[in-house]
Image (cartoon, rainbow, N blue to C red; front, side, top):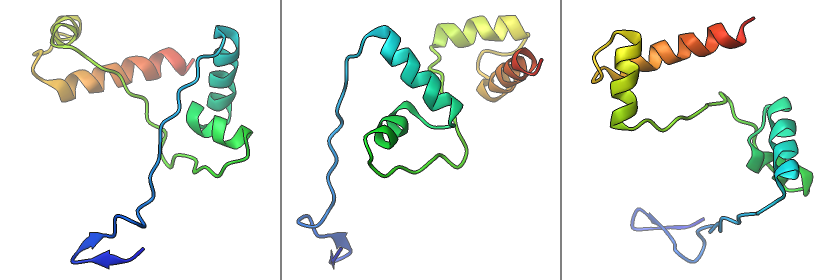
Length: 102
């Protein structure tokens, strides 16, 4: 790619378009399970299945959206200040580890 005054040339910049699929619940679940078993995201699993290149994640990450109400409830559950997002995250991680470790 060529640069022009510190910016990427718009003509050579790669563009991606997100494509959404609506699959039967059983197919979607099977895809998610097979992706998880291979350590891939569902998106990368689809890319693999249809023959496109993909990059496995270096450190798989799980995400969770928490509302202000969620933080309030979790703060009470863990006996923490609802504003202490890092401590609440730590408690959630410990709970997940305990649940799935055996």
